[in-house]
Amino acid sequence: MSSAAYLAGLGTGASLIIAIGAQNAFVLRQGLQRRHVGLVVAICTLSDVTLILLGVAGMGLAVQQHAGLLQWLRYIGAIFLLGYGLLAAWRAWRGTSGLQPTSGDIDADRWRVALACLGFTLLNPHVYLDTVVLLGSVSTHYAGDAHWWFASGAATASVVWFTGLGYGARLLLPWFRSALAWRLLDAFVAVLMLVLASVLLGAFG
Image 1 (cartoon, rainbow, N blue to C red):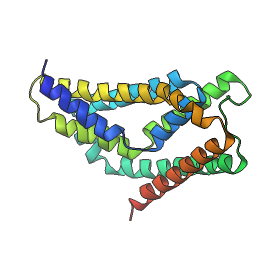
Image 2 (cartoon, one colour; image 1 turned 180 degrees about the horizontal axis):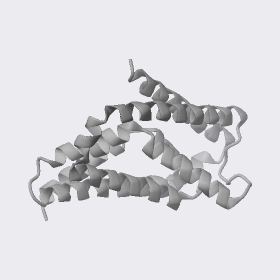
Image 3 (cartoon, rainbow, N blue to C red; image 1 turned 90 degrees about the horizontal axis):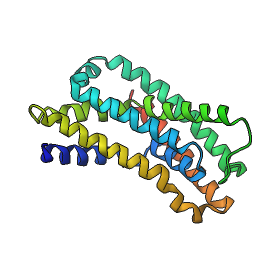
Image 4 (cartoon, helix red, strand yellow; image 1 turned 135 degrees about the horizontal axis):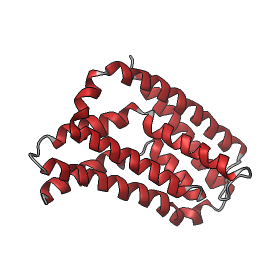
């Protein structure tokens, strides 16, 4: 085992994933509501690990060569974030969030959560730049099996972060007993989503 490569992957992966973003805000919100947390954590971690492995396997260069695809992802991702941001703003205005899941068909709700999670994970072009391109590039500094230990470290950071964020969110429940706290959270999410959508659209300028 190359401990140096593993720790480098762990640190690099953590530094990229811990930053506040749309995906993390979504995972936090689902964790607070205790709605399909396992499903959300599984989608985020499996997607991240898959992209990290693809990057280390050499797909980073292919992504860089298809800049047009990333451009389209920026458009689609910006539209997705804009729509979710407006929805969060509506929840903040009406105060419709809470600790209990909304009424309705559980299976349908599970599909909606899964699709939203996939949207936050795969429609953000920065996800590919961070996991596939950046981590893939850094892994080339390690020869032989060491670059796979680097990938293992980065993957570990992803698994630990999303699991901790999703299931650890319940520690914040005492602060979210009131409707005001939920309205403030939704207002924060709305602003974050709209800012990120603007950043994605601004990338064309």
